[in-house]
Image (cartoon, rainbow, N blue to C red; front, side, top):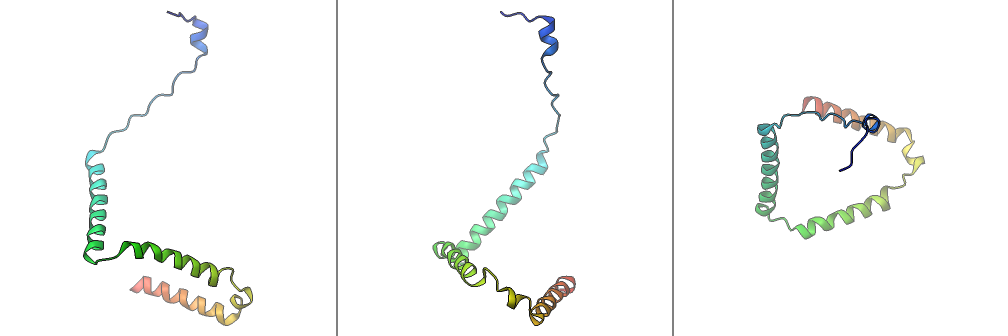
Length: 102
């Protein structure tokens, strides 16, 4: 056995005190049960609606190509036209009113 001197014992840092936390069983159970219910509902919906998953995953490649080829980079001379900016502002106003009253 190796004995420590009092000088060695004083220079060693003390471990940080552990913080005690209560395990919240019902809350954790509700969280995982809700997640499981959402996943079961999603999988049942996919089966019930007969959605072909191979077609669903291939769709994102076409959407990404569409965005990168047609919408990026934007044409700044078109975007800065006053009619374009007023149309964007009108769209934002309609979306706000729809969210507020809809």
